[in-house]
Image (cartoon, rainbow, N blue to C red; front, side):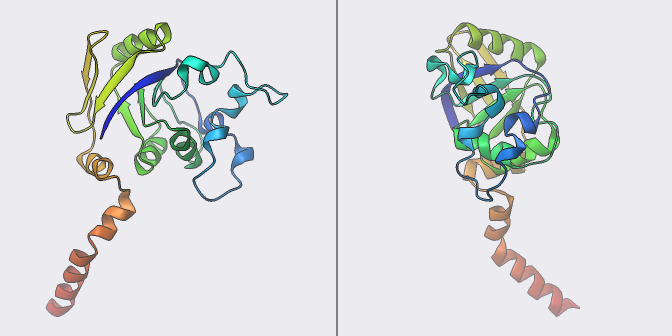
Length: 195
């Protein structure tokens, strides 16, 4: 998995899942269509028109695939719909100093790479992204790096090997287990013969 894309800075701490996808949109059970409601209360005015001040509505941020956020992103309820909305919108990676645990797990399971880096690093790329809508970051999952040659930024991030393997293969945990079905059947068959 390699991502080379522009960014959207969202310098807000403690963004919860209700802000990411408001509860009034949680009526459908499939994953598609949630992107249009991502940050709905911030993206749209009470009359339904786009809020021209919100960063997601800026013309120079359209097509960005990397979100840079404040601390404790995805806190609140455990709704997986938050990850569905982010993925459906087209965001491939989110960079923060910390993610809520359940949101982080949901992100992985929906093909989104949550990257944890130092506060200093987030501050640097956040400010550079605010200043330059054309700032691109290059993320290499295999090498576990975030790089921007333009600003001389380079950071190595940690990721659990299992989560890394799933993202590299484009599968979730259930699909990973399904791939092991022959081994599981063989193990069970052997176990029954031993007992």
